[in-house]
Image 1 (cartoon, rainbow, N blue to C red):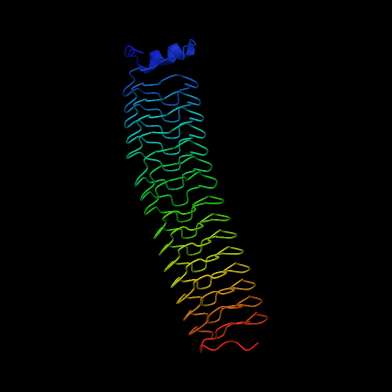
Image 2: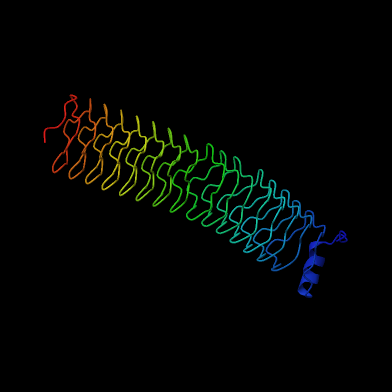
Length: 336
């Protein structure tokens, strides 16, 4: 469609109120559209660079391929919008409502995204590398193949988000909500998950080497075969977590809660487990060579076949523990 003649904001609103909805390719560069109501308008391919759309009502608007460079969309209401391939470079989207919007291929380099609500939005392939997404709502959003490398997602809500093939190197997920998210096989080495809520998360076979999981909520998490060497799990909550065949060499689990957790065949060599709660944990055939278990609570745990060679057991609670076939700190087998 050919480019429409230049129209100003007053003409746009007059024509909209008259019932017109098709404004494809309109030139509205720098237009003042503060608090306007353009629900359902078609502005596909429109030029809205540096336009003021603060607090505008834009639900179900079509901005496909629109040019919104440097525009102000703060606190805009844009639910179920069509923004595929739109250019929002350096746009201000602080506090914007973009629930269920189609945003695949959107350009967001340098955009302000504080507090934006992107729940259930389609963000496939979006480049958010280094973006500040503090407190952003991405619950149920589709982030397939998105680039989140080095992005700040502290306190972000990502529960139920789709993260297939998403790039997450150096991402900050401290205090984020990641309930029931699937991150199986991801490279998350060194990632900051401190105080994150990760109930029932799937981290099977993921690389979490040197990751910061201190005070993280990992209840019922799937960490089977996860690589957790040198990870910080101080005061982490791992109730009923599955750590079967996980590698936790040199990990710090001081004062962590692993009650009723499954640590079958896990590698805890040289790990720190001071004052750790392991009541009812399954540690069958686990490796605990030179692990520090001082003052840990192992009441009711199953350590049959485990190796405690060189481990520090000072002050450990071993009441009702199954020690059948355990290799003791001095290298001898526990007498049956």
